[in-house]
Image 1 (cartoon, one colour):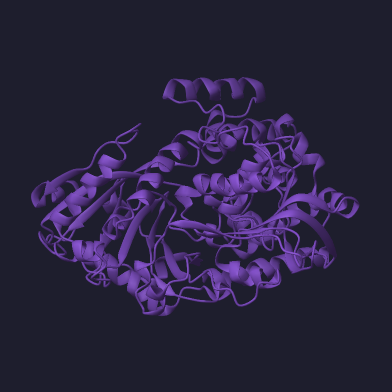
Image 2 (cartoon, helix red, strand yellow; image 1 turned 135 degrees about the vertical axis):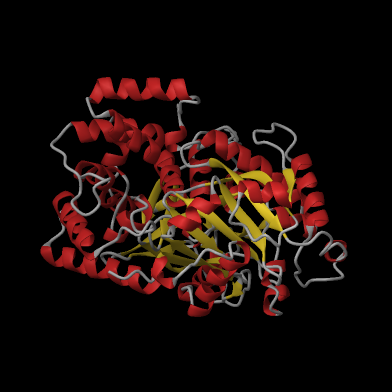
Length: 575
């Protein structure tokens, strides 16, 4: 496990002990979603010692609740956000190169039911004279996709868009609503495991040799003139750290963190809730083929149907919600999303009984009157930084990271890192544009190269070829570390999730900063999201945690009930 030697020495307790002994940190990052972890990784590559604290698990908030898309944002063109779309398209392409194990090309098809609808709405919205959404017709979508292709022309990695008339579209997708007039297809990308991208960025930061550290289940409670009070959410222990710079990357919780830092009353965030369903519906999955179906309801709200391994994801809603901890899908949202399937696939039945998982989160959007007026879809998805200089009462500057899209996290982190470097009188020494992420490092680029890579791992570990292929699909080139660990001891499949094995889970427990049972089910794996979380599995995995992490019988029982309550209350999973 050579690649994980540093992570093994930096156990959670070792990091806590280091804080007790040396509470001074050049940079404190509050928030372990993709923006905060992106900044940690960037700072680490510049050689800076930084500490990231996250009150839950890494990537467990808004970063876990996205539509799993890496895209330019086609509909943002209508709002005139050309800079954002241009940046997002190029960052999408960088992710395809830097994280090919977790970023994959995705063909997206738009069924279109009108030729000219929205023709006048689009320019009026662009000019700011109209802010209500409306359905777009073929001509408006054609203009948008042409602009999309134009902005992505430099360094193009994906095919251009194409239009097909009704007959051709129905030949390819015979279950589509025959009322359509045409269909358009273009390419973006998707990420099946956004939480693992967060994790691997944190692991990369800690392995950089800079002294960067990431602590999950560590909450920022309060702040004084030169120190910030932290509390370990697992033990209740508190400690103070003295930062030179603070980065508030708490996403939808930014305003709450600002209040803890002595800046109560500031209003930076006006988030909206997006909810999604995961369906076990083989008929719908087959109808989608190799494409995401992306379309608009008559009210202009975007809906997507995404093939997700053997499941189908349906999303998303866009509802104003000020309290991010209350983000749970409602019955009305479920009804809305299910009804939308019938608009494009009218002869495919979707039942509530087919729902295996649901998730909701609040987008960390900038506060805007648009959201307050009931038009949240019009709020910009762009990112910005609100900086508060150091004062006599608070001797460190605070940079609050507002908004942002998953796709643009690297560019946003670069912007924030440059501000921190300026505060500390340092210069950037590494450009992150071409910095591979985790298991994307040394990734074999073609079928022959992949086959050779797998043969070498099989020769090294003697694991079956099929098992190595599964590990490679899950972890990219980090599969080599998993394979070596698995081969070093007696292994067997989990009784209640046989595509995973005991040694595979133990490898996560030892080297992937797992602190709670739900970390394994929801963020280190796709087990829960794909509908595999059963009570018997929780018991089985808790026993593995006890063996590896030293949990008592009482802790095992507590973790089982804690995970069960999250699955039941947050994701509507029936155990």
